[in-house]
Image (cartoon, rainbow, N blue to C red; front, side, top):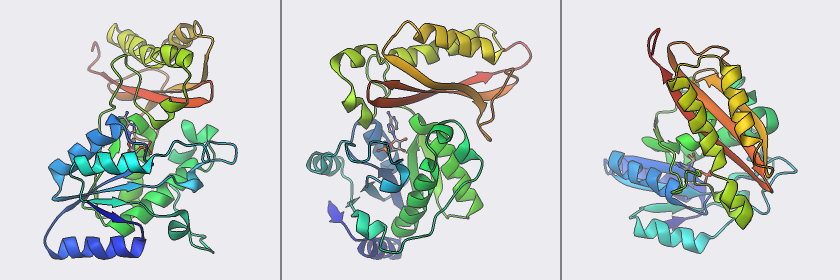
Length: 287
Ligand code: AMP
């Protein structure tokens, strides 16, 4: 596996792959890899000849009081995992390489970036879209893979790609969970033993919601109230938001009609801010 730390070198390497007629698959990450990440790498391998994984904890997507400094990092372990997976290139740039002195250009997907998590993390998605646009220009992937776990992020990136004509196909991989249902996340590392025990309740509340939809409930305020009531049994879980939205504009839905909706939750468990979501599909008039 090649380890590339300079954007210029990465760009040159990608141009060379293209010259050789190879397709490039790309999985951007912030490292501290888990099976959620590796599932996306497996998908990238299926779609492309060469797989590039970036490891970059992107400072501009963290708010001033957020966890940039203490975000878990273990580059040696990440390197071993990527090597074992047959990844071709690990792109591991420095903050100075990505944001040189005088950096002042940002990419913003208006509207979508202010919804759901965006309401509580101002500037977060602007940081995400800016870094992903930069990474796309550096890695020049044919295919890039993102996780459904960060559903809003995937929707925003798809919109950016469409709006700015990035020549890349976006693939969204399913959320990988621990055996007890907790969505895998580098931030699960923050959980104490006690917090870890109750953390699966977040996913259970989503399953409860899905069950209600399957039983015919269409009033989203009732579904959200049931989730809140279920989670209120867990003192340690502090819900930030629960919303049921459409999957294009991320606007709240009052009554579920035919089509797909996203049920999204963010909650604090001690120091960890955890997010999760589930999609629900309503069939016809009676489905
Ligand atoms: P991160 O390192 O947290 O920025 O995540 C990098 C990529 O992995 C993003 O596309 C995430 O959506 C995806 N990802 C993170 N956790 C999971 C998971 N549990 N299942 C699937 N994809 C995930």
